[in-house]
Image (tube, rainbow, N blue to C red; front, side, top):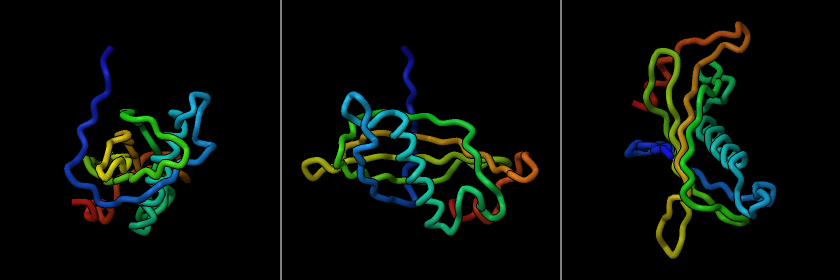
Length: 142
């Protein structure tokens, strides 16, 4: 079976900590795939807020997720505090990628819990169509 392999950027422009809640757990007793996606969504919202944006207003453009890829590396359990590093890269005319690195501190070393990438498109929600990535947004990450 072929597996997804994400090549992460060498540097990240933002890091946050997210605690695993009891509602993030599935019947297996660890974070479920749906909750993992919610964790990276929360990290993305904090990342955008850090730069003065939201998913509905990036220099006048909205964002819509076009695709997602996730590599699960380690179980996440209730009470774990995950360090999530985030950055935006691979800009083209209408979109870009956001990469995520999720790490746990274990015995004074960081252990990768997961990697993810979301492909984001700029979108005009009023006109219901794609729009160009604002140049001011791109300049913050190049």
